[in-house]
Image (cartoon, rainbow over all chains, first blue to last red; front, side, top):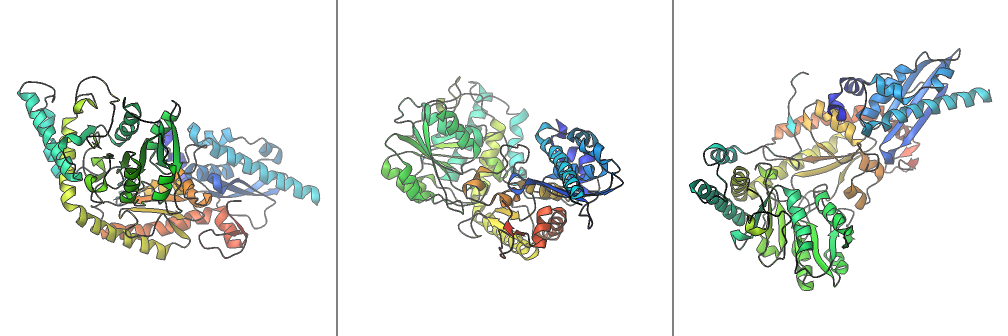
Length: 130
Length: 413
């Protein structure tokens, strides 16, 4: 299977070498960070929400090439989604957008999905407080 | 992709075939293609070639006799044969193994297999630098111990073990000693008689020889059953038609490297020093895993962790710049994320996730090293700029393990 290696997947390689939306949002409405250094992957996603829609998303990732590519593509996928839509965001969309991933790398999109969920939970918690 | 400069720093995995070796192998593919078991003149040519290679190999490790050299298919087979062959030997005494906690998977896996079949094993712990203490080996030996298995230099950390002191222990206890010399052969002179080992294995593809051939030295009194049954090749200890071209190449590679061992080691030690001191000056929070450079460490090995960066990501980025290194982590398997060797030395899990392994070879040049010194630091910086943990370190909410400030909590919470 050629896609066992990050190098053989041009979409993954592109997102890894030229990651989109890296960093944090200074005035983020929600921030989610999931994973553990000891396990080799940590993903942080920050979102900006206006009128019930995600207008901007940024990420930081500590992890392998696929973890970075998964985070990068996720920030593109969730933009302009309503909060309700984003709550249904699935790791399958990440895998599909990256052109399919080997089973050994399936935890990377799962972690990206969890990071989105954590950011949304943070957004909703802040909203309920205000 | 545009052409990039290539710097190969994974010589532990494979080395380029030396031209003299290729030349020596060439006639044995088409002209002298016979099997060493055949009685006719074609067989005779193959037998002569085999005998010459066996002599070259015996000279390389100072074996008493060429008959003590067994040719196998590679290092993994040699380790399997040494361990399982000892276990299945009809005259064996006992059912217990002693090995270190940081053996190569070929050694570990062979012993683990035997543990599923009624054998037992003690895994001797190591120091934080990966050193096996001879005294720990002595304490682990039991009445029913049938073999002690240790390596001469560690494949991950480059730690050079005190084989002479360990051999003293095993001799005093009357237990055979198997030494895995896969990582050290070609870098450290091998003298099986002076070391007093019973079994020792190494692979010529680590020093300019071909793949597809391994060597197992068996001191002639060591008990060893065959694992491959069929013909009487290799003195009945390894049936199967010999891979003559590879064996011929292995013999020549051993002869060449045996002559040049000291010069090679000096040359590569200089590159190792240039690389480590250069990286240390250019990459903040960089840790050398394993012993300090010098007599206690293999001159070809650097195992490094750039804190707050994951190793596989760095490996892939280096590869896009033409620099080939190995990863100390195994991100492809969720269950086996950290190398057992790095775990055994108690390395912080975050640093273990960041480990990369650079192994030098004799054809590396100073200008190769300088290319790495200018390429690697910006890549670490790029990955750190993406890393949430680096950001937390900058914010002061997370602390460094390599250089504690102290501020913030440690990364591996």
